Amino acid sequence: MQINVGDIVTLRKKHPCGSFEWDVLRSGADFRLRCRGCGRQVMLPRTQVEKQLRSLTPGKAPGQRAEDAGPPVN
Ligand SMILES: [Zn+2]
Image 1 (cartoon, rainbow, N blue to C red):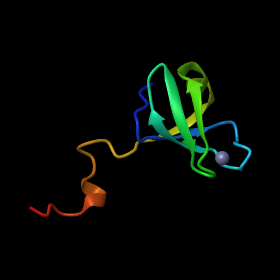
Image 2: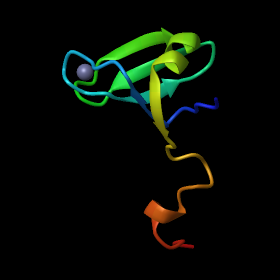
Image 3: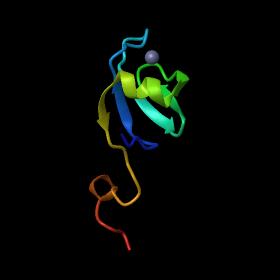
Image 4: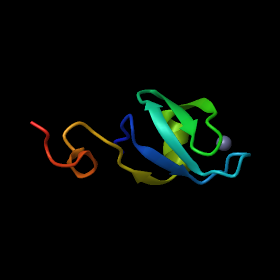
């Protein structure tokens, strides 16, 4: 499972604010996630994120920004 910074993960467990979606701020052995509902940040070990993961929405990786950046300016 490849999870990158900038991706949005949907977890099975609902945050107290009601949101299931988290922004990935840091990946590695531990993940730093920011709740998209309330903005709270948490650190979770990779094993727990993978266990709770329901779906993964790829974020804006370098080289994949064409669709929302519009036509090249230069
Ligand atoms: Zn929240």
